[in-house]
Image 1 (cartoon, rainbow, N blue to C red):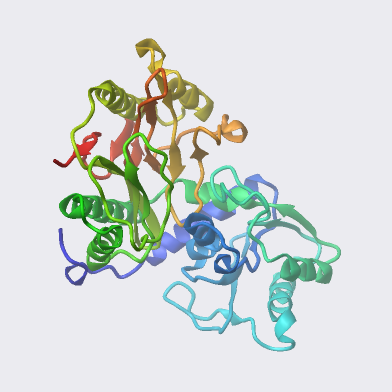
Image 2 (image 1 turned 45 degrees about the vertical axis):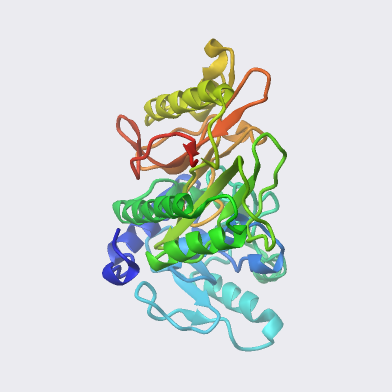
Length: 408
């Protein structure tokens, strides 16, 4: 695979920007909104959040502006949006944003956001606010939303005759279906993540410090052009309880019969791809083999089943009962891929009750990693990677075969 120095990416095109803004306008029109308003959002780094939650806090800003920290008002009638960022420095998408500076530092953002809404004539408008709560297809973990409440409340106070309503899904469903440019970035990210898994297989041996393993995998992905995104590792003796962590554990050394479970993420074009490749430092016990076979079967069957138009309730039930005929258990694990904290978020704990009526659409991309478990619960296995929904079902962004890799 080409190193980062051999790959040129000039950012998303202006046509991609317009596609996103027009999708938001169309969703806002259906919702009866005069504009869509993304206020200042929380800086997730200050709240001890998981990487996915932290990255998700300002994910709508990256999607709409290609800026890490920005507010935007998009009029539904087709007029140009107004964008505010901290310094007023622009980029290829937005050459001349408004700065949030001026006046009291404490109120600079609310002043600028209120003025943007007023300048667009929204004093009596129906304003859709993005990020107020957990969305169906974005902010899947953000039950309390991602908005900086103090700045938002002050902005609302300045427009007492306007009506402010939640519009998280207005942008969420624009993010839900990926464009060709986004799919190209996710494919490249999935390839880099898969290379990270191959590097882990090259390095992982009994006696190797866990920190060395971590550094080698991360170094390989960074050299191929990924942004930094911490790998999740869950390593320890097979059949013993282990714990998931996202930092290298100094002093821990890999041992015989250790199972290395991982979530290897790579970020290209600001989009987070993920591949998962469990590794066992020893022979695979016989009792695990039928579970691995079942997981492989449900992985491929699920890809065939995830056709456009199918409701998630149907898909969830199909996967969760797939193992019944084998006298074993299967369960769905599926996470949306994108700018951060993308739903659907479907696990054994998150049953998808609020999104059973959401439909699969062509252009969806998610990490698909269903689980299989023996009837007595003594053996379980999960494997997966990024899948793109096409007209005929899911296809892997990187062609890999579900299996537990044994290193002896």
